[in-house]
Length: 256
Image: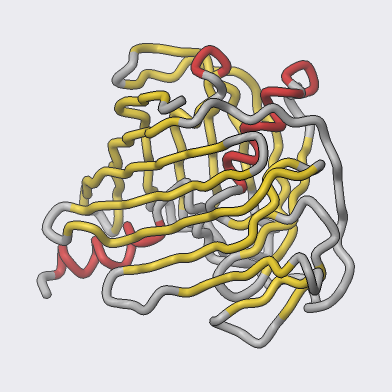
């Protein structure tokens, strides 16, 4: 494997929309966590294509991403694929479940990385428990919990129904499960900005997830475009050393 291939493998496998940020220590398993019920309005089903650029250890890298978002009145699914030059498909994720009073109610989250076996996170609503194939931990299901692929779309749905509350400085908390544990994520609204995409320039709401000071996880910036159904038009992950991975909308096609 060449050095460039190695860097692509080790950096682009954690690309956006799957929100695969290195986790901070999670809350104690089986312990309570905050629960918030908010109005929501799901966006239309769509296929979104993204152009990916990154800078890692001085190298400029490129790739592409595909997100298939599907929703009905009772169920949803999110399927993502990430491809990198020289390597092809390096990451697949899926989130599927029902729609309840909180919005997205995941039943299963699957992550498949290059040359690795898939991992599965299960939201067992009969036992009210979140479990993982990658660890023996479990967390209680209290309502409103999300996974790392569905969380972006849950926020989109909440933003669509709470546009007037998306004010700079406002904070929005979610309990998010990954491949092996779960933790609280806090998004802060930065404000509205002009974003250039292949679809042209559009105004977007800028959200920011900044890990605690003692956490070495990536920072996450998300831009949602109100005039484009609030779809995510840009995402950027930034490492503590300044390296970054950026994803910008290339095209979008509604599917219902």
